[in-house]
Image 1 (cartoon, rainbow, N blue to C red):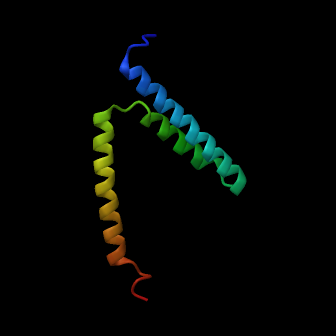
Image 2 (image 1 turned 90 degrees about the vertical axis):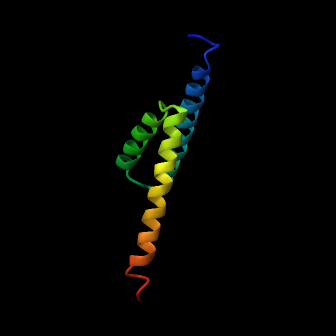
Image 3 (image 1 turned 30 degrees about the vertical axis):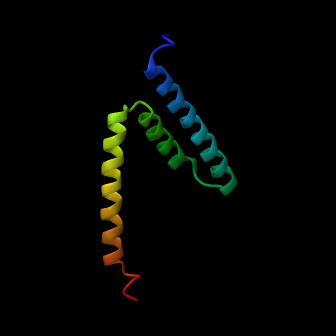
Length: 84
């Protein structure tokens, strides 16, 4: 283990946040009596995200933001609740 490797610090930080988010999700899941199956799926996806580099995070965030804009614009214009 090389303590001077900057990628090592990033990995440790991402694993720390992964564990923190999982603990919070587990507590909320048990308090609200939700199913654990979606939590397991979300947890596995979050674990895969811990290995991404900065460039991948940038492109992921950009495409995610574009997708959210398209999703909400389409939903706002085509919502059946809006026409009532």
